[in-house]
Image 1 (tube, rainbow, N blue to C red):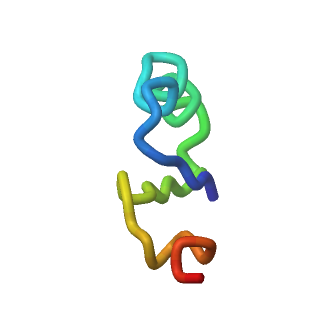
Image 2: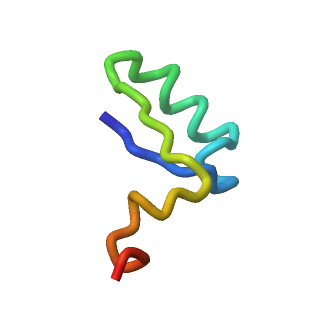
Length: 43
């Protein structure tokens, strides 16, 4: 399992090549911004 955000290096050719070479990896993308996922913003 790989958890990524929308950073440019997570969308590049290297990441695509790694995912193609390892099809068993599951990719989970985080939303660009979500205050519910950031506990400090709820204080």
